[in-house]
Length: 352
Image 1 (cartoon, rainbow, N blue to C red):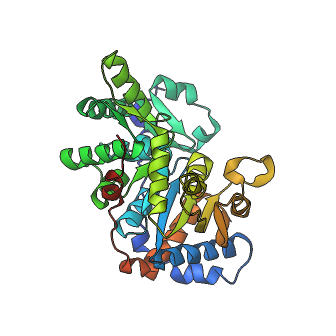
Image 2 (cartoon, rainbow, N blue to C red):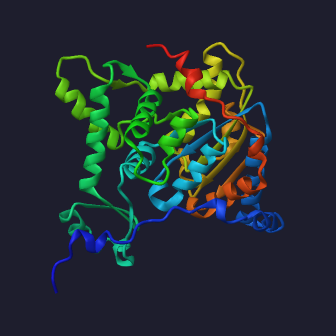
Image 3 (cartoon, rainbow, N blue to C red):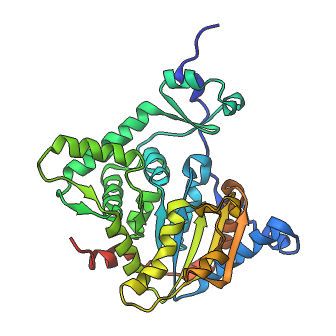
């Protein structure tokens, strides 16, 4: 039997689910009368819809884990397009390795069932194929993504940037050079001026591109990313919103970073206001004491989240998120929300 080639593995692309095609409102409303996670999901959908109807509320979307490769990109693009999101806090993997990667014209692929058991990982390594559970990605194409980040950094004024500023430049790059995917989170956020923060920015493909940029510059001035600047900018965003709400997929750094700005306002001498609304979709629980599974009620003790409108949904994201966001989309209350152009606002308060 001849040895497999890369294309033997990379032949079935992941397709992104389109929430606009399926009206799930009756289904989610029916879940209100059920128990367990079904009722939690229905309440979470109601809280997100309430956030969107609150004209004083700025909404932060938090993305952790690997979500774009799993087929959720179009869900988040629609949220930006429909003014359901005012700021995004994400892992670099979702925004750079996955969204920007696809915007450059590359795809993620569905792995054969047997690959989930790791039976062929050495063969994948030899073929330059990376595996994310049951999804595959071409390592050689990912290196193009790394190098494109370096190219963007090389063209910028050498100074300290927040991840928000650098990601806006990545969105501008896609606008200038053309997005080779039907949609992109980075590109849509750039067009809507929705700020994206990646507090652990070097922990992704961007990190490889930026170390290549800095190594080549040697002792000359260079582009660098300041995560404290991220924290200051998002806190300034919070100060300028009367109320705020969180829609968190997964946990980790994005969850804690977004929650912490409620306390950071107090550090800056401003009125300390907890996030009024919070929904978290996660498969983690509180048994090991880790951040991803800490409850939103626990966050109340830290002064981060109000306990009136909070809901944990213990479900895998690819199941719960299309139902929650699909419910809100087809309810249509987002139509009364205006684009707020937060990047332009933050650009006026950025300290360089």
